[in-house]
Length: 403
Figure (cartoon, rainbow, N blue to C red):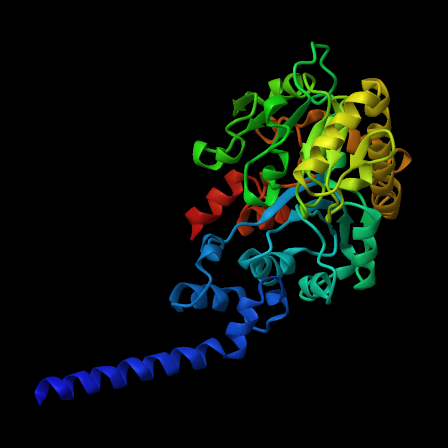
């Protein structure tokens, strides 16, 4: 009898816990969290969201790494009158951290370029919500990877300009490397499922893969003609130049660095239809868009082998796109700021941008610059505040001693 009573009590407790969990699951805040990218509209703060994801057994734990506050922020330009920053973020907890903790830091003489890794969401008021806590929202400039991305941003009511993050790839690093053509195609990048490398299966016998992915993630391309694992960044253009075309097969990805790196190195692109803006660099000479099937990719590679456009022409066209985008940044964003403060560079704002790109030492980011802060120069709130106060490390140490 005792065993039966114990069983009934246990069953009641189990069913009660299930009902409690179901109620929690249907709670509005939890549904907000499950909505993923729309979480930026939620009324709770980043700190509350962190506590939620750490304690709720049903939370999406793959976002747990973003419970550590990181400001994807780099200082781009500094003058006596103020600063220009580049701000990036991932589409998870870090969005809330950016909204609640980072954006309120920027003052009247701070100007912020909001750069994108991935695509621009096509609905809602996501980016307008992101800067709703800004003290000076007019100082925020959103950079779209393509005209389509820019249109989506402007539709939300934020300042947006077509300046792809690919425009900041150092074209002196990625350039044609005269060498013998050894492969029909090259794929440079990681081997995540998002990249849809299974579409390259019919090209594998003639494919070069340049990747940093670990062996277990490379199984989909293990039959490739050659796989080069994590080469020195300076050698990547040499490998790219050995192929007749470059493959980009993802459906959604943003600007996609490798796509423009191929073009800078003088090889055309075989791409599937995509969302995110990489096609801003494509035209009838530099790229071909194929059906997202293995047969379509093979046909695209064969077509590009026949066309064999001159490397110099491919590079020239890609650089022309970049030049147009950098002029947008220089004359539509920087110039009004410089003119307002009578900055010496108001005469030639493009000079500032070219100088930053040329001086970039971020070789571990394959020649990219601080405009796209994957490796932020100011990764903590304290660093941003210190820069705004103009304090040196010595001054900060003296302050601590006085306390």
